[in-house]
Length: 271
Image 1 (spheres, rainbow, N blue to C red):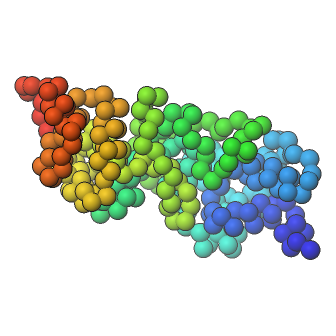
Image 2 (tube, rainbow, N blue to C red; image 1 turned 135 degrees about the vertical axis):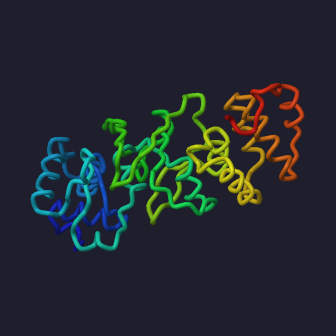
């Protein structure tokens, strides 16, 4: 006899969260767990209203607690959850599944920065970029993707939001944070965002330090490809200059130099 199948639905949901080491969840994730549970037990798919009623019951029973300031995001308060860290980075994915950690937060994630930033920086990717972390395409066959929210505070941390154009839909990946999958800008895009927005990345001096630390890990072909996709000549100038100063050469650099801006606008650091 399967021990889990003998439990009531609220406990089966908690068991599923515990298996993933999730200390925080959301209404949309609970809904997915209920649907998966129904499929596993060959029962009828519950209506969305049933999932909402289940959450209300679990809150009333002190199994879940709403996270302050975040609509439809909850913290598990049962014993297993005391072993599962609840970080702002993971909670952000529940509040906004299209949010990828970026800029200084991503530099820390990639072990390039030793800063301990107070703020959490997130970039909202285009809607078709990826599914919510920890889900599959099958989970969304008959479901609507959760809306994109932009909370200003998550677990007491200020959130700085950025967005990106559809044509800049590249350089996002799944990373692991405290044992859970989260979306982040990859190493190369993170370094380029440092060049594009150094004030969001600890300042230009700090960005250059991160480029030096990352030198042995950078895929130069990716850096070149991403820089060309951004289609910003001043960015190409800065990237080419910094990489050549670090002893890296590439055939594209000469081409970039021929299109380089001249005069007062062609500076390494704006302002």
